[in-house]
Length: 80
Image (cartoon, rainbow, N blue to C red; front, side):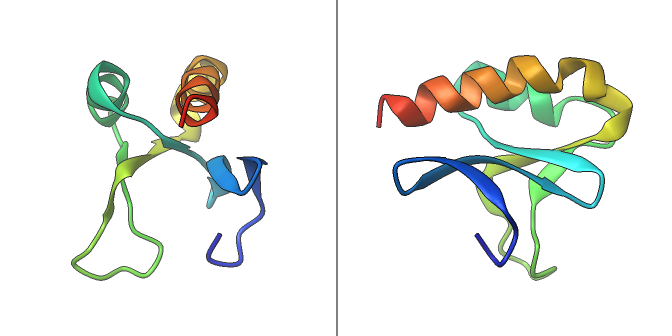
């Protein structure tokens, strides 16, 4: 995705690593929780005005929570 190695289920990506951040596809409560973490942002690899709304960049400072968000992202994409 954007030339960045990512984890996929079939052809659908659900997580990747970008500039010392975990980037996850999240929705609803998990999305709100992740974006509320200090330093977390919407994923915007092109640096333009159109961030990818369902993708959250979670900084390394919260690496202790990465596994939990990765599992949620996996489960959401698996149901798509």
